[in-house]
Amino acid sequence: MASLTARLTRTLLRALVQPTFTPEFGLKRQRQRLNALQQLMPMPFGVRKQITPCGGVPAWRLTPATVHDAGSAQNTGASVMLYLHGGGYVVGSPTSHGEMVARIARQCSIDTWLIDYRLAPEHPAPAALEDALSAYRTLSAQGPVIIAGDSAGGGLSLALTAAVLEQQLPRPQALVLFSPWCDLSCSGASISERKEREVLLQTDWILFAAEQYAGQQDLDNPHISPLHADFSDFPPTLIQVGSEEILYDDSVRLAQRMRHAGVEVTLSEYPQMWHVFQLHAGYMPEARQALNEIAAFTRQQQKRE
Image 1 (spheres, one colour):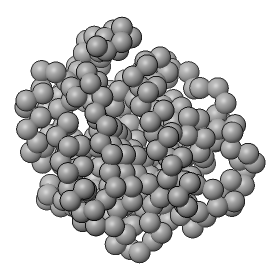
Image 2 (spheres, helix red, strand yellow; image 1 turned 180 degrees about the vertical axis):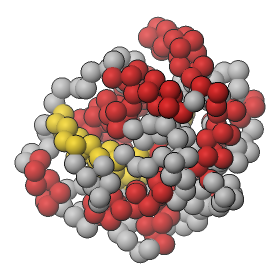
Image 3 (spheres, one colour; image 1 turned 90 degrees about the horizontal axis):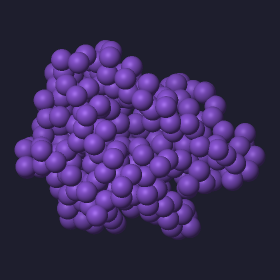
């Protein structure tokens, strides 16, 4: 059974947040609402925030106190994390995701860059991928990079990894994905089968966001829907997904295809959890458990180097 905190949070999300995710609400208001809601959550202690570009892309650099000499951390060859936030490629920012990502940085004891990539419809594909690639080039020139992301940011993490391998840049050390949205055609059965169980996203909003991001490109293009990417040389990957979300099948199909390609992949399903429940790690035990799993996974991958 889900914790009492989780049950209360689920009720509040369904009543206060899910109604926001409709095309009619308007992107400007959605962006403002998400930023305002997350600003209610205080940043965790022990993490230093710097607002500084990464590869020419605006970013928050989140450095935990456990990472010594933060100013030169990149030059030591230590692993860093590049985090790509979610929001359907149309909303989301370091402000909306900074609190969660700071907790991840602290839990994993890793210098983390949360970039503010360009959003659609003002900047449709491939703008987000171009920004992510620019940041990755800069970070990978200094040492190993773990790529992480949630929802659309998880899909962008996959598209970025495929682009990195195509361009023969240093392979990412690992991938960490929360409920990755990797099929923008929304062909998974869970889109309809789990519609009544979802407490955050709405199907019409997802379809709207896909259209805004893809622009004139085919939704089955691997750079748009990386479920169709070539996974043959992908790094070890951790995928976390809630059992109650409409994008559930994206994670399941992704794990299946990655395993078939020979990738070392772990799919962790969290019962009775919703889309990107990790956002509530400040007070919800299930989300804290997920962050503990991420920390153990990233430590394991760093030891391999």
